Image (cartoon, rainbow over all chains, first blue to last red):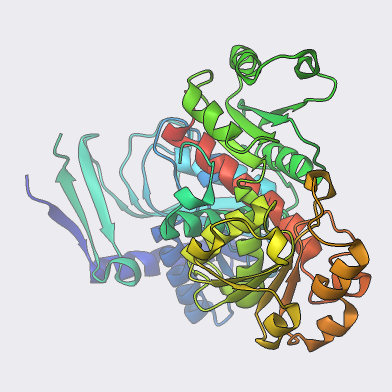
Length: 179
Length: 316
C-alpha cells in the first residue's frame, strides 16, 4: 500500500500554533514554562513551539533537549542505541512547568523513560506532554495534554514524520509496513 | 562493539562514536542524580592481575554510574597466587554470571586470549596488557585533547591536524601504542621522542616520526606533549645511565615548559614520577591536563561499558 499523506507542512504549522496557544492557556501565560524535546524530531518541534510561544506572549521561553536512551526499558532487546545530547536551559527545571514534546506518541514507553530522565535532572513542579501525532495503542497509563492530530492506526502501520530541519521536506504519512 | 581489545581495531567512525557517547556521559556528572539506569542488573568484573589505582577505580566508578554491579578481583590475595590459571579464573567468573570482564594483565595479549577462548561469553575490555595496549587510556586522551580544542562543539569531530609528541619510555608503553593507533586514525600526527634504547624494534614501520632530541621536538611547537612514566618495574636492563641524566635530557622541566605555546597541552597518563620525566611545575601548570584526564576517564569508560554491554552486544 502506498504511503498516504495525513499532514502537509501548513497543517503541521497550524497544529503547532494551536498547541502553543493551548499551552499558554493552561499555564495562564508564559511564566515558568520550559519546553523540552525528545530527540530527534521532538527537539525540532520543541524549539518551534518555543519560538511560537515567544511570538504569541512576547516573552522568551526556554527550550532544551532531553535524551531518554539510558532510561529505556528495551536496551537489551534492540541493537545498541547511541544516545543524543541532553541540553538543559540555563534556569534548569526545578519548580518549573515542563512541557515534554515528541513527534509520535505510541506505546508511551518513551515518555515513561523521559519522566525517569527528568527525575535525574531535577524536580519540576508540573510535567505536561505535547505530541504532534497520537496514534493510540498505549501500553502504559500515559496520556497527552496537547495533541496535534489524533491518528487512529493499526499496529502494522508505520507513521513517518518528516521535518524541514532534519529531512529537508515536511509532511506526515501513514503506510502499511512491509512485513 | 563486542570487545574492546585494541585501538587498532577501531575505525574513525567507531572511535568518534565512543568519544561522542562519552560527551553524553560527561553531562551526567553535572546532574543532581549522577547515575543512569542503563546497565541495571548487569555484573561487571574488574579482573586485575597487575596493580592499578586510577584505572580500576575509574572502571568501578563508571560501572556504578551506569547502575551495574561491580566485582573487584585482584590477583594478590586470590587463588591466582595459589597457581590458578586464567582459564579456571575465567570459568569461575562465567559461573558467577559476569556480564563483562575488564581485564588488566602483565602479559601482552591476555585479553585477546580471554576474548577468543570461549571460556566466558561476555564482552572483554582491555584495561592494559603488558606492553601491548591500553585502549581506554588512549580514548580518554583523545577525548581530553578534543575537549580542550573544541570545547562544547566537540561532538562529531576528529583530531585532524593536531600534532602530538609522545616523550619517554615508548618501549614499555602500552599507552604510547594505543595512542599511536587511535590518534593517527583520528587524523592527528604523532612524533616519538626517546632515547634510542627506549624505542621498540621496528618503530620505523609505525605511522610516526621519531626524534631523539626533546628540545628539537619542542621547537616545532606541538599542540600536545604527552610525557610517559619511566616504568621502573619493567626496567630490567640499563636503558639510560641514571635518572638525573634522563631527567636533564628527556624530562619536561620548567625551562622546557616555558618554550611551549600558551594553548598547548601537557599530558601524562599517571602515575607521575615528579622530578624525573616531569617537573612539579609542568605537572601543576594550567597546560597540564592530568586531572582532566582522570575525570574524563570515567566518562570514556562509561561509554565503552555502555556500548559493549547494551543492545545485542550484551548478553541476554
